[in-house]
Structure formats: structure tokens, C-alpha cells
Amino acid sequence: MLKTISIIGLGYIGLPTATLFASRKMRVIGVDVSEYVVDTINRGNIHIVEPELDILVQAAVGAGYLRATMQAEPADAFVIAVPTPLTAEQKPDVSCIEAAAKSIAPVLAKGNLVILESTSPVGTTEKLAQWLAEMRPDLTFPQQAGNGSDIRIAYCPERVLPGRIVHELVANDRVIGGMTPKCSEAAVALYKSFVQGECVVTQVRAAEMCKLAENSFRDVNIAFANELSMICDDQGIDVWELIRLANRHPRVNILQPGCGVGGHCIAVDPWFIVNSAPETAKLIATARSVNDTKPKWVLQKVDEAIAELKTDGMTATDISIACFGLTFKPDIDDLRESPALHIAEALADRHAGKVFVVEPNLESLPQSLTDRRVAQMDLNAAMERASVLVLLVDHSQFKNISPQLTRFQKLVDTRGVWKKKHG
Ligand code: SAJ
Figure 1 (tube, rainbow, N blue to C red):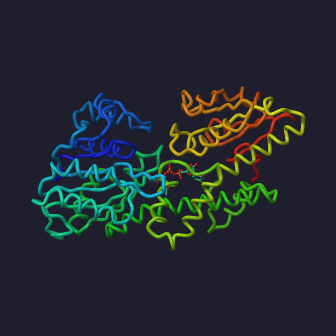
Figure 2 (cartoon, rainbow, N blue to C red):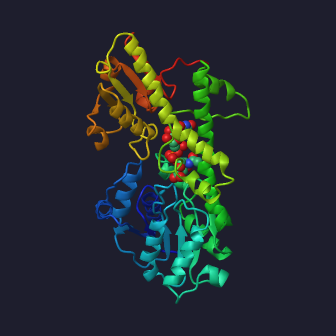
Figure 3 (cartoon, rainbow, N blue to C red):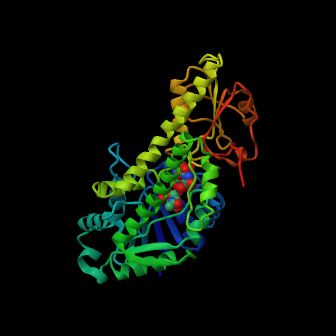
């Protein structure tokens, strides 16, 4: 029975996972490199915005089941949930996993289970096992000792949706790739403490690829929608109506176009596949490029709207632009890799007139925008005052209204929210 669980990395995945183990009355030691994160959690507070999480953390810390620290301590199981970003050359950076391995190696003991949850290129779990084996020659690892190893190692990707993390951590099926059958068995037993979905066992490399394939599938499908939106615009067809019509086919399910793909997963993970198979991953690479091109296309549409206003006699400085929505997807406050934010920055850089932002989910604008003299404005004022209305994110606050445009106002709606809806 695993009684003490250590979670390495207390971010969007690590912290909710830690609290769910704690809610099952397991002793949880959360480890993070940030003193601010550790202090915040130890006060029973959270440093990220995620529904339900604040109450869970408060309860877990209050009841003494969850504690955060900057130094790894002995435990029965270690769950690594650290970031795996891309380098400037779009190559996976697994240095945080290596650092996590270094931090836990000194406290590892016979019988421990080590699980990697971070999205990782295929082969990373085996690398992790190798790093640990080099640092602890006194212990045996699955790559050397097979089923009888002292330390068990598995890859178990997270697949939860930001905004629904707590619910999905419990409800979703888990893919579990142990380095040996015993490793998988131990990992299933651990997750079964709170996961109500099925824990499906596979090979370690298949589990790594599964995570990358899931996010690439979504990226490719969003790219299809984004490409369609540009084709339809060219041909005078309302893409949102077209998608509603096509989706009436029982085997068609086109996703929604937008101003680009953001967040730290869908826009990142496909590169892990492209890097490992540059010759064959052509569709995945093309989808990335289609989605990355979409913000530039939106900027072009704004330029066209400005040009039309100019032909009506307005000067560039008379023309104000209001961006509606800044976050990477609706109804969250997360700006990571947000195409809407990049569009707002680019508009501020290239436009001589005023640029405003309406973002009901943020108390204040990021510095990159305030530095560019972009101001926050409320919804009604922006709809009345802006010359170009650029709808970037379909927040619920924007959905139930339809702006009445004057002759001197233009609309660039990247989400189909303020377009006339049919059927
Ligand atoms: N988007 C569109 N059109 C759509 C759907 C999404 O333009 O029809 C855009 C969003 O606006 C956003 C981006 O895609 O900019 C990503 O949003 P998302 O809701 O698709 O995904 P994430 O990044 O919040 O979470 C994804 C999820 N993966 C899948 O759905 C396959 C989640 O389950 C993963 O756990 C998460 O990535 C992750 O951590 O990897």
C-alpha cells in the first residue's frame, strides 16, 4: 500500500493531482522549485486559476494531508509533472525532467514507484530510468532487472482540459505505460485511488506517443477548420454556417475556426512528433503551420477593414481598434501562447490610432500591452467607440449580444459569434 506520495512540479497538473491524492487521505509531499508556489500552497491558497481547486487545496492543507517543500523527501511514489517546453528551434526541452530526476535520486528507496506525467518525446521515460540508475547504482531499475527491479517506473500522461481539470482527473480514462508489467501494476494501483475512469495498460513508448497523438489529432482538426475559414472567406461563404451544415452528416465533425491555436499543449506537442519523424510527419507539420498562419491572416483582415474606413475619409489616427478577448480560449484567464494576445500586440505595434482590449476575465492587461499603451475598456464602451471591432475569443459575455454597427464601424469576427446564425 502506497501511503506517501510526492508530486514533483506543482503546476496546472501537479497541484490538482496532489490534492486528489490528499483527498483520499494519502500523505502528499508537493515539491516545487518556486518558493512563492510552495509558500502559497502551504497557506492553503493556490497560484493558478482553476475551478474547484482552491477549496480542495485549502481542505487538503488544512487537514494536514498536503504539504509543499522545495526539497525532495522520501516517499513511496514519485509523480513527475514538470514542464517540457520547446526550445527556440522548436526542439523539446526535457531539462526539467532531468532536474526532477536529480532531485529525487538521493531519496529513492527500494520498492519506490516513479511515474512521469509530463508530455514527453518518445523515449524520455527510458532516459529518466537511465539517469536515475546512473545516480543510484546501489538500486536496480527495470531496464536492468526487469520485473524484479527495486524501482518501478511508468509513463502515465495527463489528458485533462484546463477549466475542467478536477472533474477530468477523476473521470477520464488513463493510459499507463509501465517499463515492466510490475511497473504498470503498481501505477494502476496508485491511480485507482482517485481515478474513476479505466486505467488502460500499454507499453511505455506507446503511452508517450498516445499523449502526443491526442493533441496532434486536435491540432490537425483545428487546422482543417482554420484552413476552411480562409477558403470560405475568399469565396464569400459563411464558414460557420458551412460547418453547421456539414456536421449534419453523421460521420463529419468539423471543429471551430478561430484566431489561431494557443495554450501550452496543442500548439507545442505536435512538434515533439515532427522532431522525431521530420520526413514522415508531414500532415502534422503542415497543420502547425496552418494554425500558426491564422493570426497573420486575422491581421490582414484588420488591415483591409482599416483600408475601407480610410476610403470613407477617416485617417489612421481617427481609427480605433477594439480587441474582444485576449486569453488562449474562452472563459479562462490563461494567456499562455495566446494568439489573441499576439494579435493585440501586433495591432498596437503597427496601428497609428488607439487600440483597446475588452477582457472580462482579466483584472488588468499584461505588461506587453500596457507598455504599448493599450488600454482596457468595458464591453459597451468598446462596441460604441471602436472603429474596428475584432472578436478574438468567444467568451460567454460576448455571446448574447450583437453589435449594431454604424457606417464608420467594421467587424472582424474570428469566432463567428457576431455573425448572423442560421438553423
Ligand atoms: N481551438 C479552436 N477550435 C476548436 C477547439 C480549440 O480554435 O474547435 C483552440 C482554442 O481556442 C485554444 C486551442 O485550440 O486556443 C487549444 O484549446 P483546447 O481546448 O483544444 O485544448 P487545451 O490546450 O486547453 O487542452 C488540450 C486538451 N487536449 C485535447 O483535447 C486532445 C487536453 O485534454 C489536454 O490534457 C491538454 O491539451 C494538455 O495538457 O495536453
